Length: 447
Length: 100
Image (cartoon, rainbow over all chains, first blue to last red; front, side, top):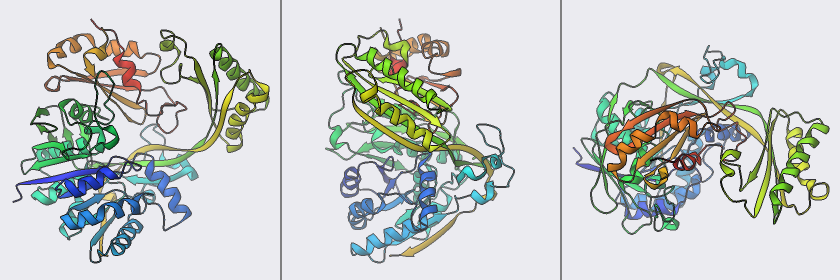
């Protein structure tokens, strides 16, 4: 049996930096390189692109990422696992094969995993929306996507067939790591303690730079060196599931007990019950220990049987948001910005816009944490008024920005830098479907 | 002193639910965190920004607490009008809490 596996994370979200992934591929001495590129809403947006163009719907940076990392991965024997397939893993796998051929890597086996798209299952299936208790059918034509969070099983299958690149859709983030570890060590699908440990590794790595010192620096308090060339994480995982988190020597950032603690608890509710498609992971007994510079040992995670149902992300159209902004500076800036907010609010009433919700923020003063906290700090030299409103129609949303822009000649003196934007809201709700209603399929083809 | 003098933390989100970790720089300060930073105090400190109860989980071996709270209705990532839709900056507000 393999003694230990080196697995890296080359992206923590769709738009993440690419050079750290190249650094991992070239210098990480990796067995596996994972790219986690799907947030809750990303796949719904991808489904909209696919509806527009059946050949689209995968990650926009897929070809660029693959061009950057495939040469080193092929040379070093690094297998890639990614959910960059988004709404269209089959088309994404074809893109990867195309890039491979361009690079002289014909023969590379690339697998696409499908089956997470369960729109047909949830429509007319009597399922209930988790957040509201309403039937899924109540979303009507507004429902644009339904993707089940699938687990590691099809990834294990694809790797077993010899895939060197595995492209999934809505696989759960940690499952992208659980799959390669199960394949490498021969762990079974019901070894809950081992799957809990693998999930802890996946959870620590899945946001890439967030465990190597990204999103941690606070100057003078928690300084981190080299954030402009932040190294992405590597886990050295042993056959018993114990792991060390580290990064490429000489890269920027830091792996410390503090950075690992923050990431371990990131997006976690009850640490004893982190529900994934593979296992209900228990992080409540995890221990972290320093093992040299930029090396943290992880042990003590365990797990309990996987849930009988799979979570489904339902993407649905939910109106529009109009957003208008303008800046005021110098003495009296805040009073002028407040007057401007009053004017816009009154104008929207006069022109008949009836938003579902409206808010006026003074950026620099109260936009993040409300008015209660801003009172204890000195008045800023400049503020930026932001008026945002959610409306049923695009025309009404457009009106928000127009009314802010009109402050130039109709509002208080000294306003500058007005901007206006409107976007359609693609909201996400969730439901749960029985596992046997979701069947995944692996399609392996060589480049 | 303020919580940020002895602890660090990060906010995470899932829909309307937000979790805020609070982790002691020095494990010796964990008993102080456990005593001072109760669910009730967190709820009171962030009262204007959250809705519903605050649940606290304790992880003594990590010298960490994990708070789970809910943002007000309409406060989910995809539908909120807030400038910080995820509530990622909330952990900085919590770390301004005065403790003794």
